[in-house]
Length: 212
Image 1: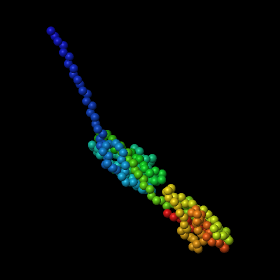
Image 2 (image 1 turned 135 degrees about the horizontal axis):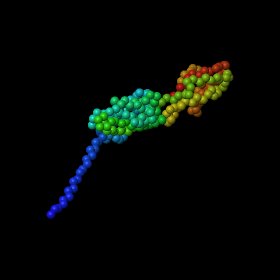
Image 3 (image 1 turned 45 degrees about the vertical axis):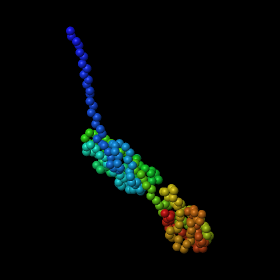
Image 4 (image 1 turned 90 degrees about the horizontal axis):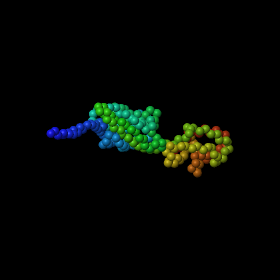
């Protein structure tokens, strides 16, 4: 008598899973994962010139790192040195606190052996600087008729301050050697005669400077 035996052989197909070669970030601040958000600890003052370093991105990996790549340059604001991870202000760009208080960059690092990548989203804070107000022109030329009486309006000169929350005040810095002029007492930037002029005169005013 024959008996039939059925053997079941289970075959397991193994799939080897490689973890990303990039493991952490150490700059501009510590991040314990390959991907994530990193705030730059120190703010950058507005007014920085092109080429100024903004921050350095540094990753760690299982093997040697390939070049760093700036996959998001915050609207053209930054360029990166692929070897060092230093991100600098791009040519023709400026930092303006009044236009943007933060900039967001994305930097990718790659493990040069297994190709694993990590991407850091880096937020850079821009700090405000007290900027001086300025007139639209460096010099204004006005003519005053002879026999003009005191309080005659010579002209109104308004300066603009980039810092919208600041208040601009006005004073005569130079050129008024005889104390002939005064700014409006109502706080407006109007320059008026302080006393009557009895001689034919053509006044060419010196450049005006608003108070900082």
